[in-house]
Amino acid sequence: MCCDGRKVICVWKHNYAGITGKAAQLVHDCIYEHEAVHLPETINCTIGQRCTTELKRGGVIWWDTYGSECRAYKREVRCLQRARNKCGDDTFCRSNIRIFLEQAADQRDAYCKWVFFS
Image 1 (cartoon, one colour):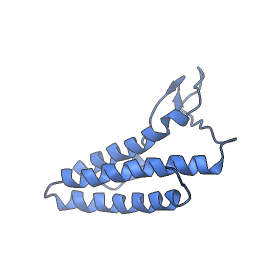
Image 2: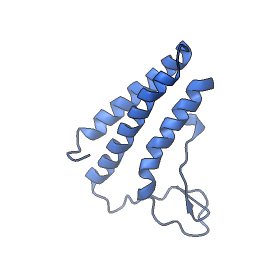
Image 3: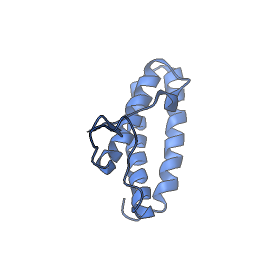
Image 4: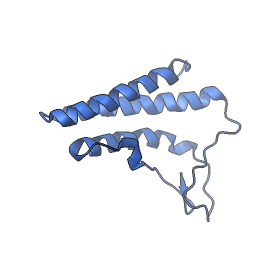
């Protein structure tokens, strides 16, 4: 995303709405890792752009987009697997991490099945 001429990584709170405490922070951190994979794809930000997403999508071949999502979800899944261990004995935390881990794994599988070199 471009904000005031700078590339930034954004995680929207609605992406993990409904969870609180330790689980919310762990999920936030893993979504952040996912979004960080996309940072190199953000076009050069020009001064004056105000918090808009400007990704190189127009001329990008579909498998490049799928490859990017595949890599991003792989990173998110690994992060969530580590996060699960950080919950310790907190069953609410572990349960919420499991839900996000399953969703991320489904997305990873959907994107990665079309990518040969990810």
